[in-house]
Image 1 (tube, rainbow, N blue to C red):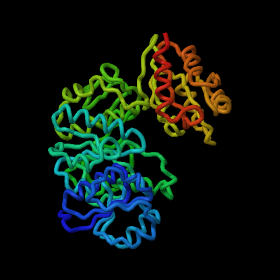
Image 2 (image 1 turned 120 degrees about the vertical axis):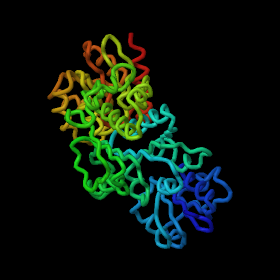
Image 3 (image 1 turned 135 degrees about the vertical axis):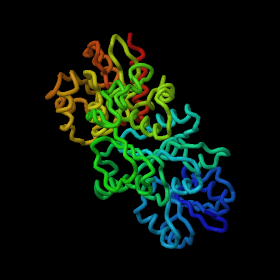
Length: 436
């Protein structure tokens, strides 16, 4: 597809938009970039790109372009994009533009939770097997930056958010991975069904020769690729795990407890999805096991910090909402002392109570929401309320017997005491390492 002489309008001056602009320039296009932000947002952009800071809808309605490339952070269905779309040939996103100039294989990964860990796992396996496997898309490097490399990898591990999937047209994953689905981004989508429909577009361009790696029990209409299932509840699935050992065809392909820092049923699902995807390329069990030795998940996502006196300490500070807290609890295979709390966001935590009865032997709450949360959690398990995270770690240690897990999964944001979930998770890590 030649862009020579074409006008490509880029909406958004962030890293994704910049990568799209560079790729369009390489392909001979005339490129303009538009953003609501001021000129400071356009620093270090090549002089060949026409810059339009403080761009308004009124200006956008006058722009005539052959293609409009929308950054994923901009609402595709909002009035701003609608204005710029009035006189354009087509509206796509950066990943779709990149896919048109990429000649290798794509493992596309989507889901409400677990995308980033799975994308990293796939990338690690691919790199170890000699395929390159750059993590890109919604995590890692913009796909267009990968395509611009002098020698692009033979396979990419491409994380795809619903926002990115909204604007695909021809993007064709050789392997699509569907991890899970739960309501999210309701500030952007009018209904849960609309959000789900956006994610289902990952299967849009697949054919019977492709593969779809799907969580067992998921009902996904219109999938025509060869399906491979994974499950932590159904031993009849193609891949099965009890949270410790990964089984395929009745054989052990990985022991998560020996050689990796991955813990919990949700991480077992991520591992199974990654291994299943890579197996479609012919990568062996031995090669994958070697690749995952020493692997630790991204920080703040059920990250194993330390094992002390037989107790595992997990940092799940990224759990800033109720669903993430529920997922972390549900995934645990050892008795849990839950550490939760932070900013009061007016959420209803009642759905957590049955899970606490099932999974936890105690809880410690802290921060702004500590007291009301403790009153609720006490209906299920012994609970103590404290002021700070440091106090919470001390109390949690006293409650946790050998063979249990202290799980920091706050269930709300950190802005009462921290600048973000990263600072909160780092503080927890430091406190745990100070225990003697």
